[in-house]
Image (cartoon, rainbow, N blue to C red; front, side):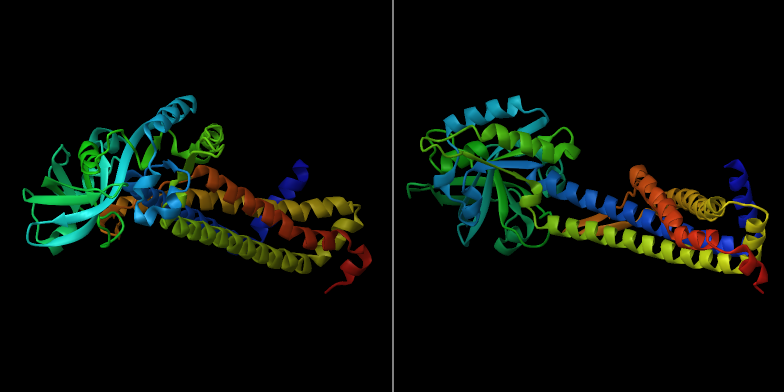
Length: 412
């Protein structure tokens, strides 16, 4: 085997122009795919973090059927006090929870005493909420980064349209599930920017104020947002929590809770899937380019070396050794190209980070792109290239091993 490896290396150096051309194609393919995977993967991860760490959390839990009517923010589908106790017990049994925040979501009327408009409000406990969505305070453009009782944080464009500033006093009026109407004066403590775009009418009040406005004698919760210790275990956590909560039934024997990951809550997940699809397409393109280039080079190598193959066969070289020789040449080109391509990929990603590329996402400005090399993906791409290089060499190698010595020696 060592002699075949030595001969293969000698042949690659002897036909250096062809080898350099072929290896260059492999290197370009590996660099292109690896850098694309690194940048697109980093972009996807950062956008996912923008969504989960500023709005949704990693997982949300609702009463069964709540999400089917979420646009109307139904008060009659909140989770009751007893259900919350059962949910707390389930979350303690399922490993992976880092932080939990309870939210009361409701719609109401927002009045400045001169103008009135409708608004969507989230009643939150700021201490717990900021642990689940740590980027939320960074979205507060003006005013306090905290939220106390008697205060309200409103969206920027909503504040502009209503001509409201930090420190103004406003009134929020809402009706509860029984239809009774109540209002409360609140002080504007902050102006918040939407995470995804100019739209959005979601403001924030303290959860105790929300309960007071809705006249809740017994605590009720619209949704529970959960942050995980390890985001990579998202689907395992969802599966385990869903299995655990499936045992919690109401008086009719039906499940009480629905569990949703951020993927089911945000339209950005469709963009993330498109990024994954584009990555797959680029990988397939790499395989096609490498296979075609190596196949072409190896076929030409066979035709150019017919007399050499005939001489080797005439002096007693076994067909399987000729087969192994050409397969080894293809494998070596794949390995050399993959190694050089991997090194250049790491260097290119380092240069990208050095240039500090920024981009905008929705209303979030100047987000720094921090590309990272996924060494598992890089290894997978390299192994794929080597495997394809060997596969592309099979047909030419098989052709070389089947040549008749007499015919090969007559070839001009």
